[in-house]
Amino acid sequence: MKKFGISLALVGLLGLGGQAFAEIGSIDAVPAATLLLPYFEVDMNAAEGAGTTTVFSVNNASAAPALAHVTIWSNWSQPVLDFDLFLTGYDVQTINLYNIIVNGNLPVTADMQADGGDTISPHQGAYSNNPQWDGTYPSCAGVFPFTNPIIQLGGLTERVQDGLSGQDVGGNGCMGLATAPGIATGYITIDNVTFCSTDFPSEVGYFVADGQGIANNINQLWGDYNIIDPGNASAHGDTLVHVEAQDGFVGGVTGYTFYGRYIPGQTGDDNREPLGTTWAARYLNGGAFTGGTDLVVWRDSTTNNTLEFYGCGVGPDWYPLNETEVIAFNESEDAVEICFATGGGVISPPTPGSDATCFPLETQRVKFGEGVTAVPFDFGWTYLNLNINDVGVTADADFGSNGTLAQSHVTNVHSALGLFSTGYQAIELTDGGDDVDPTINGVTGTMPTYSE
Image (cartoon, rainbow, N blue to C red; front, side, top):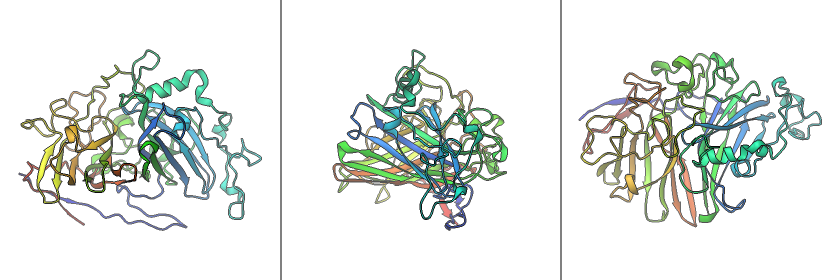
C-alpha cells in the first residue's frame, strides 16, 4: 500500500466593489474569463415548460461592457453551435436551452452601434444611465441583433438537435452518444472575447498568449444554472464553474490549462487555470432522499478531435473514458472498489477497455448506486480519481510526469422525487496543476493526508 501527502492551498476570496481576489489554480466562484456549464439536459419531445430543460445565466461583474462567446458541445466534445452575446455593464442574460435547441431562438442583444436607440440592450435607470456601460465592437457589425428563429435557417435546427442527441447528422455520422430518446445533452463554455466570431475555442487563433486572440483574459463573467424537471416536480442548480485567466500562466509545473488540449504544442496560450483531477463526493440513497443520488461528471479526454463525425454508438477512439480509481465508503468507513473489472486489473490506471467504465463520456449524469456504480451501502462518500490512461489514443495531450492527468468536474445531486432536490459541487482534492495521481491500494489502503 502507498502512503502519500498532498498539500492543498486554501482558497481566499471576496471583495466586490473593486475586484475579487482569488488564487489562480483554485476553482472558486469569482468573476472569471471562462464559464463552464458542466452538463445540460433538454427534453426535445416535450411541450415548452412541460419537460426537462436547463436554464443558465451569464452575468457581467464590471461596469465595462463585455462580449461573451457561447459554445455548445456534445457529450463527445464536438462543438455543435456557437454564438456571441453582448453584455452591458452589470448586465445579466438568462438563457433557456429549450428555446435555443427546440425553438431555434438565440438571445437578442446588441452593442451600441447596432442599438443606437438603446432599446435592445437598455441600460437606463437611476443607477445605470452611464454611457460607459455600453460599448461598440466593430467586429460585430452585421452580427447583432439576431433575427429569430435564426437557427431554423438552412436546416441548422436538425443539425443541432441531432448532434446533441446522438443521431446521425445529415448522413455524416454522429457527434455524440444517444442517452435517451429525444434528450439533448452536452456542456457549454462561455468565454470573454474581444471580437465577434464564428470560431470555436478549438480553432487556431482563438487563443493567443496573454489574451491577444479572439478570447481575452479579463475575469469579468459569472453565472449559475438550473436543471428543471417538471415531471418529477424538482429542480437543482449550482454556480457555473468559474475558470480564471492570468497573463503568463501556462499551467505551472504540469503545463495543464483548461483549454490546453486545443493549443498547438500545448503551450498554455489560453492562460486559464485547470480543473480538478480527484474528488470526494457524498451519496445519499435512502431516508428522505427517495430519488437517491446522481453524480454529474464533466471530463476532459485530453484529445483535440473536434469537427469530426463518428460511427453512431462507436465514437472517438478515447471512448469510453476509463477512470483510475473509484472507492465507495460508508459511514462506518467500510469500503468497496467500483468501476473496476471483477478480480481487478493488471495495472493502474487500467488500460482502455480493460475495466468497467462508470463515467465514459465527456459529460454525463449517472445514477450512483446502480449498475456499474452499485455499492452495498446507502449512505457514505466516494473517492474519485478520474485521471485516465490514453495509450493508443490519437491526438491526445499528455499532462503531468506520467502523462495521465485529466481534468474533470463533479456535482452531487440528491433528490426526493416530487418533493425537492439539491445540487452542489463535490470536494476537489487535487487539480491539474498538482503533479500527483493519488490512488488507494485496495479498500484497506491509506487515504491521502492533506495539509494547509
